[in-house]
Image (tube, rainbow, N blue to C red; front, top):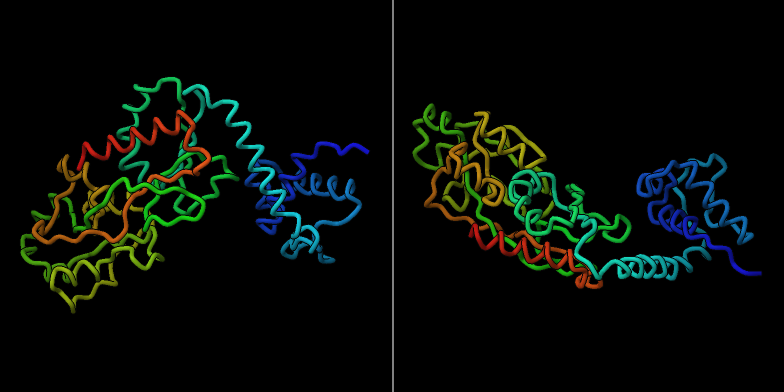
Length: 305
Protein backbone atom coordinates (compact mmCIF):
# COMPACT_ATOMS: atom_id res chain seq x y z
CA UNK A 1 0.00 0.00 0.00
CA UNK A 2 1.30 3.46 -0.85
CA UNK A 3 2.36 5.45 2.23
CA UNK A 4 0.20 8.49 3.03
CA UNK A 5 1.90 11.85 3.52
CA UNK A 6 2.09 12.42 7.28
CA UNK A 7 4.40 15.45 7.43
CA UNK A 8 2.41 17.27 10.12
CA UNK A 9 2.09 14.05 12.12
CA UNK A 10 5.84 13.45 11.85
CA UNK A 11 6.54 17.01 13.01
CA UNK A 12 4.17 16.55 15.94
CA UNK A 13 5.79 13.25 16.88
CA UNK A 14 9.35 14.61 16.61
CA UNK A 15 8.57 17.71 18.70
CA UNK A 16 6.72 15.66 21.34
CA UNK A 17 9.63 13.22 21.59
CA UNK A 18 12.15 16.06 21.88
CA UNK A 19 10.18 17.92 24.55
CA UNK A 20 8.74 14.80 26.23
CA UNK A 21 5.42 16.66 26.25
CA UNK A 22 2.43 17.26 23.97
CA UNK A 23 1.93 20.70 25.55
CA UNK A 24 5.50 21.87 24.90
CA UNK A 25 5.33 20.50 21.34
CA UNK A 26 2.06 22.36 20.82
CA UNK A 27 3.61 25.64 21.97
CA UNK A 28 6.47 25.17 19.49
CA UNK A 29 4.19 24.25 16.60
CA UNK A 30 1.62 26.93 17.47
CA UNK A 31 -1.29 24.50 17.76
CA UNK A 32 -3.24 23.03 20.69
CA UNK A 33 -2.03 20.04 22.75
CA UNK A 34 -5.14 18.19 21.63
CA UNK A 35 -4.17 18.70 17.99
CA UNK A 36 -0.66 17.37 18.65
CA UNK A 37 -2.07 14.33 20.43
CA UNK A 38 -4.48 13.66 17.56
CA UNK A 39 -1.68 13.90 14.98
CA UNK A 40 0.50 11.49 16.95
CA UNK A 41 -2.39 9.05 17.35
CA UNK A 42 -3.10 9.18 13.60
CA UNK A 43 0.51 8.21 12.95
CA UNK A 44 0.30 5.41 15.51
CA UNK A 45 -2.93 4.14 13.93
CA UNK A 46 -1.36 4.02 10.48
CA UNK A 47 1.79 2.31 11.79
CA UNK A 48 -0.22 -0.08 13.95
CA UNK A 49 2.07 0.46 16.96
CA UNK A 50 2.41 2.97 19.82
CA UNK A 51 5.17 5.57 19.63
CA UNK A 52 5.20 6.53 23.32
CA UNK A 53 5.11 4.60 26.58
CA UNK A 54 2.13 6.18 28.33
CA UNK A 55 1.31 5.89 32.02
CA UNK A 56 -2.17 4.99 33.19
CA UNK A 57 -2.81 8.58 34.30
CA UNK A 58 -1.49 10.03 31.05
CA UNK A 59 0.31 12.76 32.99
CA UNK A 60 3.81 11.36 33.15
CA UNK A 61 6.70 12.64 31.07
CA UNK A 62 6.38 11.30 27.51
CA UNK A 63 9.03 8.73 26.65
CA UNK A 64 9.33 7.40 23.10
CA UNK A 65 9.32 3.64 22.66
CA UNK A 66 12.60 1.94 21.86
CA UNK A 67 11.64 1.52 18.19
CA UNK A 68 10.57 5.16 17.96
CA UNK A 69 13.85 6.34 19.48
CA UNK A 70 15.77 4.36 16.86
CA UNK A 71 13.78 6.04 14.08
CA UNK A 72 14.05 9.62 15.40
CA UNK A 73 17.50 10.49 13.93
CA UNK A 74 16.33 9.64 10.38
CA UNK A 75 13.04 11.48 10.90
CA UNK A 76 14.83 14.61 12.13
CA UNK A 77 17.32 14.48 9.28
CA UNK A 78 14.48 14.11 6.80
CA UNK A 79 12.52 17.04 8.22
CA UNK A 80 15.67 19.19 8.16
CA UNK A 81 16.26 18.32 4.49
CA UNK A 82 12.66 19.14 3.60
CA UNK A 83 12.94 22.54 5.32
CA UNK A 84 16.22 23.24 3.57
CA UNK A 85 14.77 22.22 0.20
CA UNK A 86 11.82 24.57 0.63
CA UNK A 87 14.15 27.42 1.57
CA UNK A 88 16.33 26.83 -1.46
CA UNK A 89 13.27 27.29 -3.65
CA UNK A 90 13.25 30.88 -2.33
CA UNK A 91 16.97 31.58 -2.37
CA UNK A 92 17.08 33.32 -5.74
CA UNK A 93 15.82 36.63 -4.41
CA UNK A 94 16.65 38.93 -1.52
CA UNK A 95 12.99 39.55 -0.72
CA UNK A 96 11.13 37.55 1.92
CA UNK A 97 11.09 37.20 5.69
CA UNK A 98 14.35 37.00 7.65
CA UNK A 99 13.94 35.55 11.14
CA UNK A 100 16.54 36.87 13.59
CA UNK A 101 17.06 35.72 17.17
CA UNK A 102 18.60 38.07 19.74
CA UNK A 103 18.24 38.73 23.45
CA UNK A 104 15.55 41.25 24.46
CA UNK A 105 18.23 43.61 25.80
CA UNK A 106 20.40 43.45 22.67
CA UNK A 107 17.31 44.14 20.56
CA UNK A 108 16.32 47.17 22.65
CA UNK A 109 19.75 48.70 23.22
CA UNK A 110 21.69 47.91 20.03
CA UNK A 111 19.73 46.39 17.17
CA UNK A 112 16.47 48.35 17.04
CA UNK A 113 18.14 51.81 17.21
CA UNK A 114 20.11 50.84 14.05
CA UNK A 115 17.80 48.53 12.09
CA UNK A 116 16.36 51.35 9.97
CA UNK A 117 19.59 51.49 7.93
CA UNK A 118 19.22 47.81 7.00
CA UNK A 119 15.56 48.27 6.11
CA UNK A 120 16.42 51.28 3.96
CA UNK A 121 19.07 49.28 2.07
CA UNK A 122 16.91 46.13 1.70
CA UNK A 123 13.28 47.32 1.64
CA UNK A 124 12.00 44.00 0.26
CA UNK A 125 13.31 42.01 3.23
CA UNK A 126 11.02 41.84 6.25
CA UNK A 127 12.88 41.26 9.53
CA UNK A 128 11.09 39.17 12.16
CA UNK A 129 12.71 39.35 15.59
CA UNK A 130 12.58 36.36 17.93
CA UNK A 131 13.78 37.62 21.31
CA UNK A 132 14.87 35.17 23.99
CA UNK A 133 17.35 35.08 26.84
CA UNK A 134 18.00 31.39 26.19
CA UNK A 135 19.53 29.75 23.10
CA UNK A 136 16.81 28.53 20.74
CA UNK A 137 16.58 25.66 18.27
CA UNK A 138 17.27 27.23 14.86
CA UNK A 139 15.73 24.33 12.94
CA UNK A 140 12.57 23.89 15.00
CA UNK A 141 11.77 27.63 15.10
CA UNK A 142 12.85 28.47 11.55
CA UNK A 143 15.58 30.88 12.67
CA UNK A 144 17.81 32.24 9.91
CA UNK A 145 20.46 34.15 11.84
CA UNK A 146 21.10 35.50 15.31
CA UNK A 147 23.41 37.31 17.67
CA UNK A 148 24.49 35.49 20.82
CA UNK A 149 26.62 36.50 23.78
CA UNK A 150 29.14 33.94 24.96
CA UNK A 151 32.41 32.25 24.13
CA UNK A 152 31.60 31.51 20.47
CA UNK A 153 30.97 27.78 20.82
CA UNK A 154 27.44 26.64 19.93
CA UNK A 155 26.85 23.18 18.50
CA UNK A 156 25.62 23.14 14.91
CA UNK A 157 26.18 26.86 14.31
CA UNK A 158 28.84 28.95 12.61
CA UNK A 159 29.90 31.77 14.96
CA UNK A 160 31.60 34.96 13.75
CA UNK A 161 32.71 37.54 16.31
CA UNK A 162 30.73 40.74 16.07
CA UNK A 163 31.68 42.83 19.11
CA UNK A 164 33.94 42.70 22.14
CA UNK A 165 32.94 44.77 25.12
CA UNK A 166 34.21 46.50 28.22
CA UNK A 167 32.60 46.27 31.64
CA UNK A 168 32.34 49.40 33.78
CA UNK A 169 30.16 51.09 36.43
CA UNK A 170 27.59 53.71 35.38
CA UNK A 171 25.06 55.91 37.11
CA UNK A 172 22.83 58.82 36.29
CA UNK A 173 24.37 62.33 36.17
CA UNK A 174 22.06 63.43 39.00
CA UNK A 175 23.10 60.54 41.23
CA UNK A 176 26.76 61.28 40.56
CA UNK A 177 26.19 64.89 41.56
CA UNK A 178 24.49 63.77 44.76
CA UNK A 179 27.22 61.24 45.55
CA UNK A 180 30.20 63.57 45.43
CA UNK A 181 32.10 61.16 47.66
CA UNK A 182 32.43 58.67 44.74
CA UNK A 183 36.12 59.39 44.23
CA UNK A 184 37.63 55.91 44.28
CA UNK A 185 36.32 52.37 43.58
CA UNK A 186 36.27 51.47 47.29
CA UNK A 187 33.55 54.13 47.76
CA UNK A 188 31.16 51.89 45.83
CA UNK A 189 30.85 49.68 48.90
CA UNK A 190 28.63 52.34 50.48
CA UNK A 191 26.23 52.57 47.52
CA UNK A 192 23.31 50.59 46.09
CA UNK A 193 24.73 48.31 43.42
CA UNK A 194 22.56 47.03 40.55
CA UNK A 195 23.38 43.47 39.51
CA UNK A 196 22.81 42.05 36.01
CA UNK A 197 21.57 38.44 36.29
CA UNK A 198 20.69 37.94 32.62
CA UNK A 199 23.16 35.08 32.11
CA UNK A 200 24.75 34.80 35.55
CA UNK A 201 24.81 31.01 35.18
CA UNK A 202 27.69 31.38 32.68
CA UNK A 203 30.92 31.01 34.64
CA UNK A 204 32.60 33.87 32.70
CA UNK A 205 29.75 36.38 32.97
CA UNK A 206 31.25 39.53 34.55
CA UNK A 207 30.17 40.42 38.08
CA UNK A 208 30.66 43.27 40.51
CA UNK A 209 33.08 41.09 42.47
CA UNK A 210 35.26 40.61 39.38
CA UNK A 211 35.25 44.29 38.43
CA UNK A 212 36.13 45.40 41.95
CA UNK A 213 38.99 42.91 42.05
CA UNK A 214 40.39 44.41 38.82
CA UNK A 215 39.95 47.84 40.45
CA UNK A 216 42.05 46.67 43.40
CA UNK A 217 39.16 46.40 45.87
CA UNK A 218 39.04 42.93 47.44
CA UNK A 219 36.96 43.28 50.57
CA UNK A 220 33.88 45.27 49.55
CA UNK A 221 30.44 43.75 50.10
CA UNK A 222 28.89 43.22 46.66
CA UNK A 223 25.92 40.91 47.18
CA UNK A 224 23.41 43.49 48.41
CA UNK A 225 21.49 45.83 46.14
CA UNK A 226 19.07 45.42 43.25
CA UNK A 227 19.18 42.28 41.09
CA UNK A 228 17.64 42.26 37.57
CA UNK A 229 17.70 39.54 34.88
CA UNK A 230 17.56 41.89 31.88
CA UNK A 231 20.52 44.06 30.83
CA UNK A 232 18.32 46.80 29.36
CA UNK A 233 16.34 47.02 32.61
CA UNK A 234 19.61 47.19 34.57
CA UNK A 235 20.59 50.29 32.61
CA UNK A 236 17.12 51.82 32.91
CA UNK A 237 17.26 51.42 36.68
CA UNK A 238 20.58 53.28 36.67
CA UNK A 239 19.16 56.00 34.40
CA UNK A 240 16.28 56.40 36.87
CA UNK A 241 18.74 56.91 39.72
CA UNK A 242 18.04 53.62 41.51
CA UNK A 243 21.73 52.87 42.04
CA UNK A 244 25.00 52.16 40.28
CA UNK A 245 24.98 49.51 37.55
CA UNK A 246 27.79 47.37 36.23
CA UNK A 247 27.30 48.09 32.53
CA UNK A 248 28.23 46.19 29.40
CA UNK A 249 29.60 48.70 26.90
CA UNK A 250 27.68 47.37 23.89
CA UNK A 251 24.43 47.92 25.77
CA UNK A 252 25.39 51.18 27.50
CA UNK A 253 27.25 52.98 24.69
CA UNK A 254 24.28 54.98 23.36
CA UNK A 255 23.08 55.98 26.85
CA UNK A 256 26.56 57.16 27.82
CA UNK A 257 26.96 59.08 24.54
CA UNK A 258 23.58 60.76 25.06
CA UNK A 259 24.43 61.76 28.65
CA UNK A 260 21.74 59.61 30.24
CA UNK A 261 24.49 57.67 32.03
CA UNK A 262 27.97 58.58 33.22
CA UNK A 263 30.85 56.12 33.16
CA UNK A 264 32.64 55.94 36.50
CA UNK A 265 36.39 55.41 36.89
CA UNK A 266 37.16 55.33 33.12
CA UNK A 267 40.86 54.69 33.75
CA UNK A 268 40.05 51.18 34.99
CA UNK A 269 39.86 48.78 32.02
CA UNK A 270 38.07 45.45 32.25
CA UNK A 271 37.31 43.59 29.01
CA UNK A 272 34.67 40.90 29.24
CA UNK A 273 35.87 37.34 28.49
CA UNK A 274 32.61 36.94 26.57
CA UNK A 275 31.67 38.62 23.29
CA UNK A 276 28.83 38.98 20.78
CA UNK A 277 28.78 36.56 17.85
CA UNK A 278 26.76 36.34 14.65
CA UNK A 279 25.43 32.78 14.47
CA UNK A 280 23.77 30.79 11.68
CA UNK A 281 23.66 27.28 10.25
CA UNK A 282 26.21 26.46 7.56
CA UNK A 283 23.56 25.21 5.14
CA UNK A 284 21.81 28.62 5.30
CA UNK A 285 24.89 30.73 4.60
CA UNK A 286 24.07 31.15 0.89
CA UNK A 287 20.62 32.64 1.55
CA UNK A 288 20.95 36.16 0.06
CA UNK A 289 18.97 37.99 2.71
CA UNK A 290 20.94 36.23 5.46
CA UNK A 291 24.24 37.23 3.86
CA UNK A 292 23.00 40.81 3.48
CA UNK A 293 22.01 41.01 7.16
CA UNK A 294 25.30 39.43 8.28
CA UNK A 295 27.33 41.95 6.24
CA UNK A 296 25.21 44.82 7.58
CA UNK A 297 25.83 43.73 11.19
CA UNK A 298 29.59 43.66 10.60
CA UNK A 299 29.58 47.13 9.01
CA UNK A 300 27.50 48.56 11.88
CA UNK A 301 29.87 47.02 14.43
CA UNK A 302 32.89 48.60 12.73
CA UNK A 303 31.32 52.06 12.77
CA UNK A 304 31.07 52.11 16.57
CA UNK A 305 34.41 50.58 17.52
